[in-house]
Image (cartoon, rainbow, N blue to C red; front, side, top):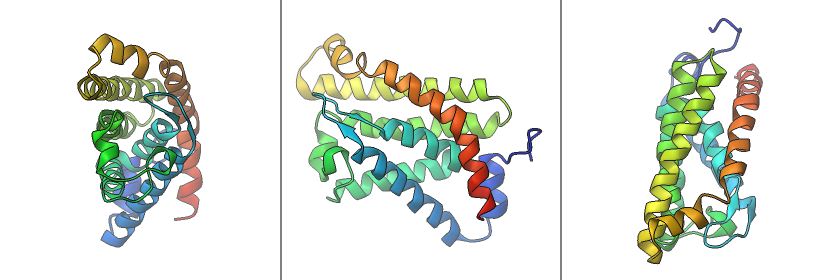
Length: 193
């Protein structure tokens, strides 16, 4: 239990859900559902669409913690690679991972890991949650920009200009939303467990 009366993701996953593998699997599947919903909320940009996926990854990582958050993202990516229409615009298949947005999708693993770690480790410090989410977003940008550059033949600077700069303000707002509302969502979920 934290000093603010809430429960950290670590405590949530290790006390309430530690009892059964089925419960942990349920959390991972729910996280995959949240990620899919975030992908389907999409505004077409080229070459990288504007989606709510980043917000979904931040929330899933913060709620489930680094281990289960990464499992949810990895499961989501595997489902999409297998052809399920879970990626932006209802796309699926390995071509999406090999396409211009593939690096950003792989970067979600690190975003969930880093943001989940910071929320778990520094449960009472929202400013550190925001810092961890910012660091995770920068790592996501590095993966996404490098892959976009390689895949499209753009220079790294060009890929940064089209794949990061237009999205940066929106991603900072998503971090604020995740930091503000993540603990509220966690509290609401705890009442149903």
